[in-house]
Length: 128
Image (cartoon, rainbow, N blue to C red; front, side, top):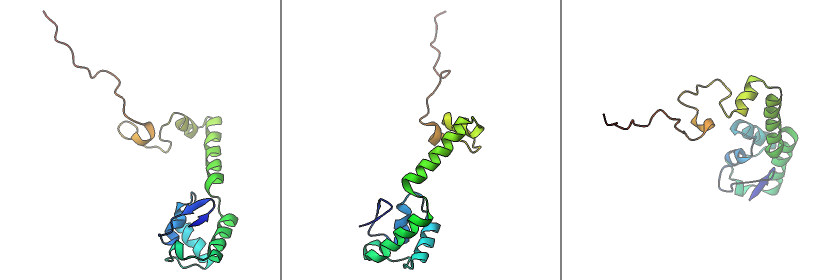
């Protein structure tokens, strides 16, 4: 089992896919890292030797912001937007979509489970 930037990457997957398990590394940057490290893209993670893993680790540490450090940067950016009370910051603070999506019908992922607000109860028949 290989560990890259503190993440145990899956052993049975091809290395270019396994690298995407590290937060901050996508398919494109994964392939770039492997070309720099001179490692075959389709090689399985379990078949890599220690030298190849260390070359990959050195490239990731030198050129990429990943995992905890990247999460700190992102949360700092969001905090800054909230502090200066920009429109995007207000949307983040209110747990609403910040990139212009509609909220009348969709946005369930961001807003959470639907809660009905009244006006839908049946009227009780009254005696006359």
